[in-house]
Image 1: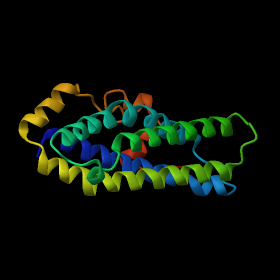
Image 2: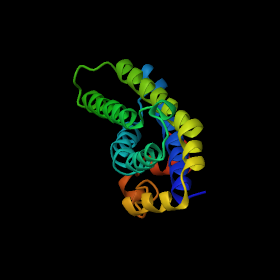
Image 3: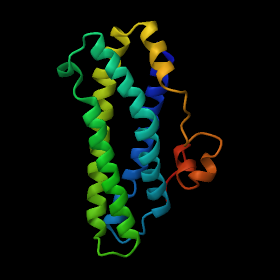
Length: 182
C-alpha cells in the first residue's frame, strides 16, 4: 500500500476521534452544564486548517489521478464538491461558535444542532471515502501514480500531533491522546 494511503487512513482515524470529542459537547450545550468551549474552539480551528489545507488536497490529487485512469465520477462521487461543502459547514460552525461565545443571541441548542449536523456529515463523508474511494484508489493506481501524488503534495504533518500540538491545542491535544473531554 502507498504511504499516502497510510497517511490518509490515519487522518480519518484522527478525525473520527475528533468527531467523538465534538459530539461529547452536544449534551452540555443542550442542558445546564457548561460546554468545554476551549475544546470546541480548538476542534473547529483544527477542522478549518488541517483537513482543508492538507488532507483534502491530497485526496483531491488522488481523485484526479483516478479520473485520469478512467474511473468514473459516478463511481467516485464528486469528492471535490464534497470537500467544499464540508469546508462551508465548518466555516458556518466556526461562526456560530464565535457568536455563541460573544454573547450574541444564539441559542445553545442551535449550536448543538449544528455540531450534530457537522458530525453526521463528516462521518458519512469519511465512511464513503473509506468504503469506495480508498479501495478504488488502491486497486487502480500504480506506484508511478502514487509517486506523482507524493511529488505534487509536500509531506505535511498533522498539526494536532506535531511538535507544537500541546501549545496550539492545549484542550484538544490531551483528549485526542485518549483522555476525556470535560
